[in-house]
Amino acid sequence: PKKTRLYVDQTQREREQAVSMHRKFQRDLCRLRLETARSYVKMITDGHGPSTYMSGANIRVNAQVAGLGPKFKLKVQIRNSGSRSMSDLSLTFLHSHSVYAVTPSHVPMQVLLPGLLYTYEADVVAVDPTGQEPIRIVMLRPHSARPVLSASVDMPASLPDEDGA
View 1 (cartoon, rainbow, N blue to C red):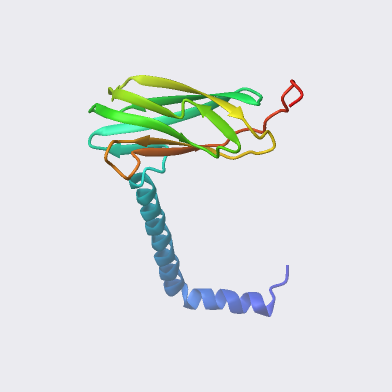
View 2 (cartoon, rainbow, N blue to C red):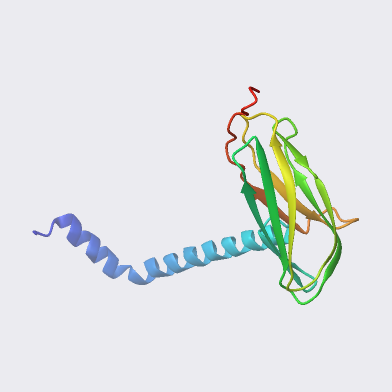
């Protein structure tokens, strides 16, 4: 194809300003990486990630929802893959009471030993089958305002109850 004047001017400009263009690109890329790293660290330290690391304990959570509704089973698996055990923790399920009823809504955990997988289950009933909101799982320590871990579970749409409700 024939080279247009615009193409020739553009390639000439790129040749003349290649160093400054590359420098600007590298600077913007470094800024993007820095902001991403800062956001990730903030998310982890605030306890909003799928895992948290504190005082030698690395805690990971995995949540699964079983059922078609309006009754669900929420299965939460917790693993401490760190080197130290953690004790005196509790799981709390935060949800909209007008949409779901969760039993139990608070689960005390005595100790999380390293390397073991702990499974906790909660029954979830869709009070309002038309509503569909996430349920937040929060792991708390006593006398601490900041959660150890937080995860959000997207609930599936609920089928209507067959009892005519």
